[in-house]
Image (tube, rainbow over all chains, first blue to last red):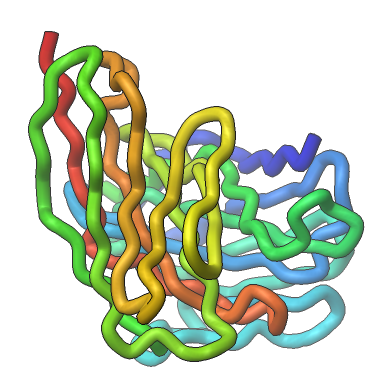
Length: 118
Length: 111
């Protein structure tokens, strides 16, 4: 149980276009979802926290107009990278938490999405 | 926010016990200590969580001294498949607070 999926697993897009990444909790209700970015050989950097039905809270230095986050339902959160540029190329990972899990405090991570902007 | 410090990398051989220590000098009263494992190009996976003393599950043990300023993840009899990055996180789990990842420890298990 407690599976989180991401789609797509990898995507290549041209500079200036927008890309949407989906994060789904498959068997539990995710009241809170987190989005991370990870560059090669570096740690995960928290980008934003989203609670179902409310606006996301962005970490300092993360542009909210560039990284649009929508948590419209208890099982789905989306991250849209708008006007992507090569420096946005990274590994994007989401995680989810929610009540009713055996470990309500645990973050369940998705498999990640590799974004390459050309 | 309690920050964590870990060794950047460690080497071990198959069958050995590996202990990875994490320093968290300014841990708060309500903070728990959580360890995650990450393989390349995958999302992190929960290993173990504890508050004080010792916690053990089917894959690891977590030792936390009385002052809680550090913790040690113990992996018994590692195998090649345990080669990964291990992250120590500290945070208030009951308030559903966000957790920040430190640099992690790259464990290299050799045959």
